[in-house]
Image 1 (cartoon, rainbow, N blue to C red):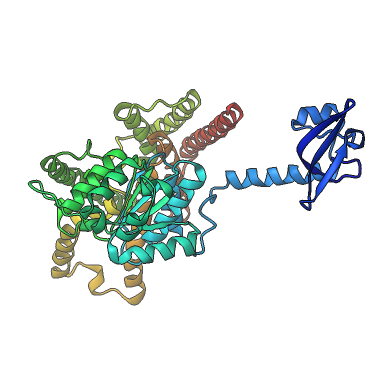
Image 2: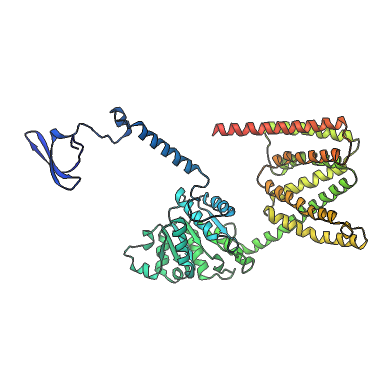
Length: 510
């Protein structure tokens, strides 16, 4: 660099009586000569530490710009929508949820089985985009039917700005590379062509992919005795590619075998025997029957208690329920409550014991409510069905019994719906959703939190029952009963404080 701040690229150097003369080209590609005596005395260091010790410090506004830029990039990298928010689309909530859940896995192996029109292609694009940005995947192979190739090409480029290379027989033959698939990061390939080309198959297996995406996966035909050529090809690719993403709107189009075939591609070690898979499916029915029976018994006892002036005793049963849930979680699920949680349970147990002693008799209704709903929560937590699917199955099992009871009461003239007015009929119809929504939320929550926590949170419901019984239904609440309720509220306060303290300590540790 000249002391006038112009630069040159040195091509040769002459030594004239100990003076170095530099010959080269300037920024305008013109020949120039620069004696050593005209060199700038300013030395540009490469390392930040060298620049610091030499006093070469940037202006404060430049430093502030770099600092705020890095800070903004850090916030973007920590965002839950990183890699999901840049698409030229308007994804709906379930698409973002599914895409984030799948893309955050290392080597995900997932079946996307949304109905037609719910955006499986958008979900797959979001997964691919987030996987590439996070570094969990660097090379992706997309297998689609031939008639969907251009649709995928347009969607990936227009919506996600992903430069996907479309491969067919012509492009593959014209490539000069030893392995044409190694020249691209994202390859879009027709499944029909890949099946018929042995050379392309060899190249695909040798390319080294991180993620395999298969659209219209229900076209992969499989039977225990024989599998189609397309299925065997995808199966072989799934054995060497860590991540697999299957897309289909009809996973059971060809029956239970079709669904098993897709699961077999994702986890061949888990789903290796079709007969065993069928047997496991059939074992869900006894669990569902038991859950439905417990739920029906709980409802029957609760309705009897409410209609016979036993609201406070029913609230006592639900006060006992958390203790039952904690005990079941400890015995069957090997949950280990923390010392603070044990203290809360002990205080609550003292309150329940006090309330039980005050009744002066064995509260069989309260015990029935606590035990039935406690085992219901245990089965719902351990069941493999989701919240909505489980509740639907339980309701379906109870429908015949409910219809038979309505027919019996209607025939005898005892049914309220046969002579109810508009107001009463509307109230009866509202009982359905008012009952179903809490059960749905309970089933969803039971799978996500410890059973002990679930049990203690259920003290809110009996407290509301107690208030309704006293203020609305006119049942008496003696001072002795209020002592028991005070102990239970103290247990809830202790549990809440302990939980907040534990969360704060965990954050401080990490």
